[in-house]
Image (cartoon, rainbow, N blue to C red; front, side, top):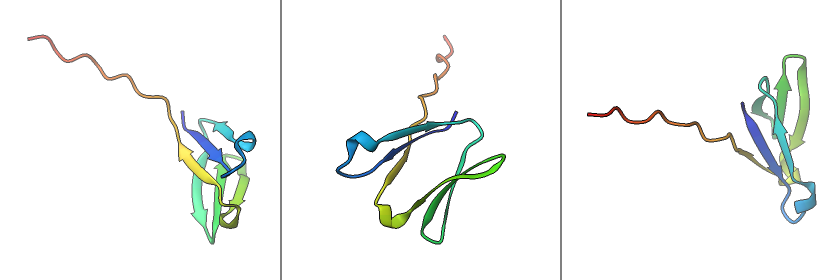
Length: 67
């Protein structure tokens, strides 16, 4: 499931973790736009200085085959 951590420099109390399996992120005309099947649901202007990081949970890798 995609997870995005949105951080605003100098404002750690405003950190936001967004989790939604249907969420997509696109960048357009200086905006970071989060969209779900119903349409755009969150837009952050570049001027806000926010850092957006995808922080998915690590996938477990299958064990190597035994020889």
